[in-house]
Structures are given as structure tokens and as C-alpha cells.
Image (tube, rainbow, N blue to C red; front, side):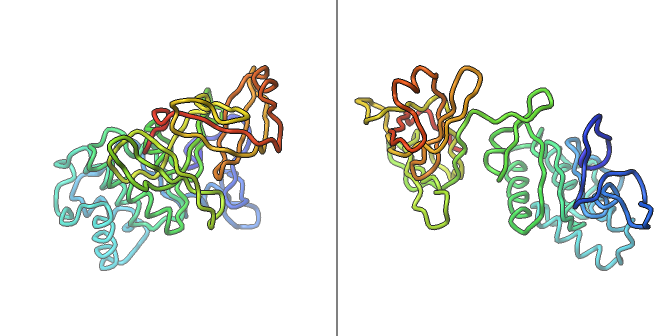
Length: 299
């Protein structure tokens, strides 16, 4: 839909304020669909390569846009370098592995220097090495100012990469019942990895969260909302995370309440209405949030 390959059954799509109208507008300017085609590139889930060499595939979009041959060679080499395939220019496209083919398709998109990059399941059916390369490229493009829109069933990739994550069920957006916290690993010992969740503001110290001991450079901690316990006072519990905070919002859900507590980072918990009354949940009330280290997943 965003690439203009399909029309929506209802509603409308706009790109930079221009509607997808299906052709040139009365004033001679292009519509949103044409603007998307001019400023974006889509990489499909299944690698689509033409016969010939890797260089011919990566430079294909440049050639049909009339880019000079010398510039094509430079941009092809740069794109292959970005996806970790230097020296692959003269290889036959049909002789590549699945992961290499997907990286070539990504290089073909990068060679066009798009302002918007649309990715359909970019890490599906690729080997671990290719997956890490693809994720690194996506992160670098986003940091450079490119808008990246990605669909994926690989939630670990979504957690690691996305600034905004939208979950879909039966074609509708639903809010995931998880706290997704960005940050860095501070240290790891025999028992725990201490993850420093970033605060809401640039100068905020954030919050240290104990997680199961794991080695790695993790950037995201995921904590299901139903794993959080709320209380007026600290609990006599073996749970290794107890944080005091202030209730900032109480939202009704189907049979539950979603309670947001600012503990240096905002944590959301699901509680029953009866439990909320017993605890005295209300905006402005100070409460303690308790959860086990084993409830936290790192990505």
C-alpha cells in the first residue's frame, strides 16, 4: 500500500501531503504515488535478481535512471561495501546464497540513495551473519536521516531496530502489552546482567534493571505488563527489581486497567479493577513496581 502497488479498500494514503490519486494532477505536478516512486525504494521479502553479475543487479536502478557509467561503478562499489560484499561485483547473481542475494537486493536499493526505504521481512530466511549485516545497515540508514518502514514477524529484529513499533492483529493496530525499554548493558556478573534503561529525557540517569545473566551488547529490554506487581510499600519478595514511582495514567481496557508509573522510566502494568481499588491506584499516587529478573528479555 505504501509503495502504491495496491490501492486501499477504504481510507486514503498521502505522501508529503499529496494523495495517491493515480496520475498527474490538473496543475501538472505529480501525485503522492508518483512522488513515492521518485523518493523511495522497496525491498521485497523474496530476493528478485536479474540474470547477470552482482554489479549489473546493483546498478540496474541507476542505469534506468540515466546515471553516468563511471558514477554507477562508484555507487555500486559503495553499496556492496555497505552490505559487507566487497569484491562481489563480478560474481554471477545465480551463484549466491540466499543471504547474499538478499544483501545484493538491499545494496541495489542503497545505491539509489532513497529518502524512504520500505522493507518487507528483510531478515526472513537469511543466515545469522546476513541478519546482523542487514540490521546494521538498517540502523545506519535510519541514523543518516532515511525514513525506514519495515514489516516483520521477527520480533527480536523489531525490538532492536524500531523507534516506533506498531503491532497489527486482523488488520488493526493494537498496542502491545509489553514495556519496550531502550538502553545499554552496564555490567554482567554470574547472576545478573544490569541493564540501564534510558530515561525519558536526555539528561535523565535512567533506571538500572536486573535481568538474567547474558553476554552481549543488548540495546532493548522487553518486560510484559502482566509481570509487574504494584503495591503501596516494598514487598517481601525474592524479585530483584523493586522501583518506586508515581502513577501518571490509568487507562481502562477489557476487564483490566493499564497503569503507567514513572520510576525514572515509565513502566506500564496491567491490574484488575478490584486490585486497583485495594492498592489505591490513582494519578499522582506513589507506588512500588516489583518484577522478577527472569521476566525481562534482552535484545
